[in-house]
Image 1 (cartoon, helix red, strand yellow):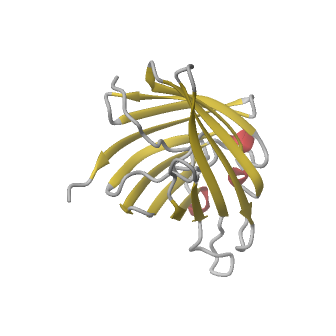
Image 2 (spheres, one colour):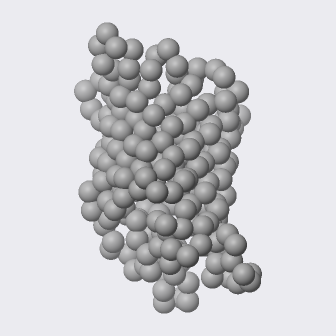
Image 3 (cartoon, helix red, strand yellow):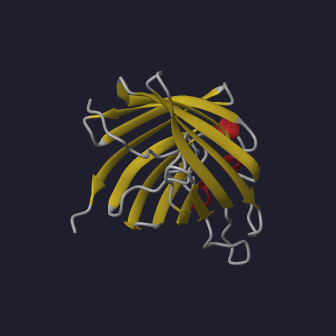
Length: 226
């Protein structure tokens, strides 16, 4: 395990904590590939009857712009049907980069292509503004990052995420830089968890959603050569 700064993925495949995104973007040319587990107890998409697994890819191809794509599939469904899988594209654009005095500010839109009118439904729609700022606690060796966001439901969708105010926090220790603790509130439920960076490029995150169900993410990070 090696020490390095990595902006890891939430269960949505978007850089963030457990269930919320942050306003941080990875360096230009960064690619994340991974998957996550979504528990049915907090999954409106499956009408709270089935767990789901995801596969995602996240690409930061400009210093201020990121595109993401996630494929979600209900698990243990008795028959294969098209409506038990979902495709979710996302776009995130940074308006302000974090520095000593200012936080990072970003706008994002998830699941913006399909529509109810075309016969396909948005199941994970989210449109939001999010602010993230990190700081260190003197003489403690701790680094703290805080995030607050606000989301709307202005697009027509079957299910929404991140509506209203939400936020979270991540804590790291200088002596154990490969490990971080985090927690968030997504507007509906509180989640807590931890993540570890393994062999520099592999990131493993585990947590609990609502303190009654398990969630997890595994992702691999690499940089595109210019």
